[in-house]
Image 1 (spheres, one colour):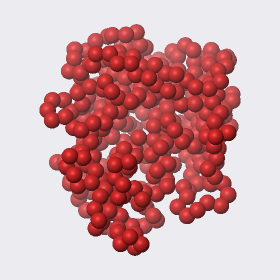
Image 2 (cartoon, one colour):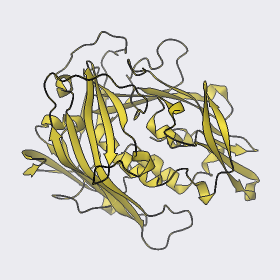
Image 3 (tube, one colour):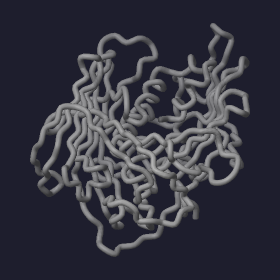
Image 4 (tube, one colour):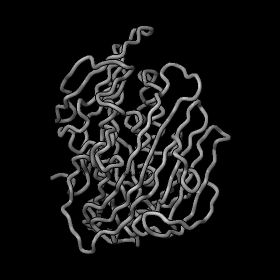
Length: 413
């Protein structure tokens, strides 16, 4: 979930200043609800429902435990060079007359690749990158740089997925091989929801990186918006046995391996820490007050879990809201430049001010001037494209990023 969504329910004074696009983006951030995007014709049939993930607790495993090989996950057999690639597209279009502030039409397309870049059990380091159809880096600011995510390969808890929708089986040829697959078609259009379709290989092979996904699409319906999003596998291969590579630092992490502290309002007791991790093809997120002592993220016993492929699909959709940088809240130019102190860093930033004369307030939002600046080493991807500070003046209220860091072993040089 984007940073702005995590604090929205706690910062009532500023909530009214948020645009409808930000609210929709927040609901879509993890690809769980409100998945609106448009279709590129759904291959072999359409779009499927986001799976529900249940987490059954086992004794917590701290990140200082001796590396183990527990479980029989294919992640334990990961090789440097294991790789899957998907063609992707996402677009949205307003239908009929829309009120002011409606989310603008937008589209993005290209290829997304996930590749094992290092293995140091129990950790498997995956690099995620987006390109255009010719292989050049994506021009979308959110998708323009490679991201790294460390994934734990052994089993610290049971993660199970319940896929919704009407099931069918089929055989198909994709990425140079034959697949036995199951399709899950979930049609929620009668309730103004999307048509969702997922196609999963029964024997994932190298598709273990994305839980066996062959194809996914979402077709939007209702709420005056058309559009959709899609992932279709185009490559799946194994790396060479015995290949090795140095563990990459988390200079530009997707999210797993990081923590982020956010203060809501002026109350120092309202600081919340978001810890992110990944395990066996699932992204984990846990939010709680920062621990007073010990590890920055002691364990992920209570963490929410989202399948990696769903998070990829959601991030593509979210990129539709970031077509340029710097951003332009309410169509305004930056009101000024400054150095924002965040923890021990001084971040070059741009300040935007949106007057609200009807309530004698001004909404002040501060964004990183360059979301890929080296000073942001270790900051989770989503936070780079959200306001680092969002305040309502002079009445007070709002939020601010206080600090961030890397908790995963070997995450820093």
